[in-house]
Image (cartoon, rainbow, N blue to C red; front, side, top):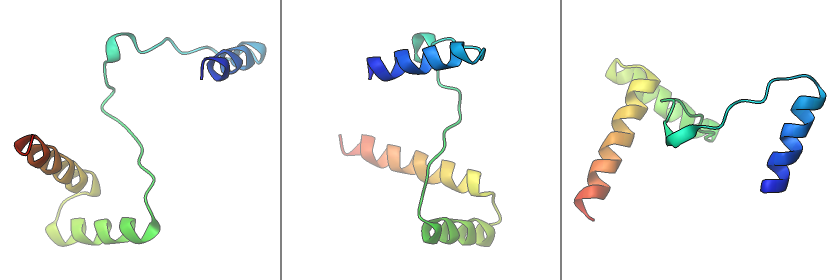
Length: 74
């Protein structure tokens, strides 16, 4: 992994692109991308529409509920 990082930095510098600063302290941006099967995406979109919320709001609720359940069983 260290070699891949070094190669990526070298490639960015060689092309004149800025090298992003490391994420000091592990501060989360509040964004992430999750790749899911098209069928799951469709089911989630349908559910969000039926509940009158955005897909983002639905996923946030599902993730928070899952974490609460996991913490309750720990």
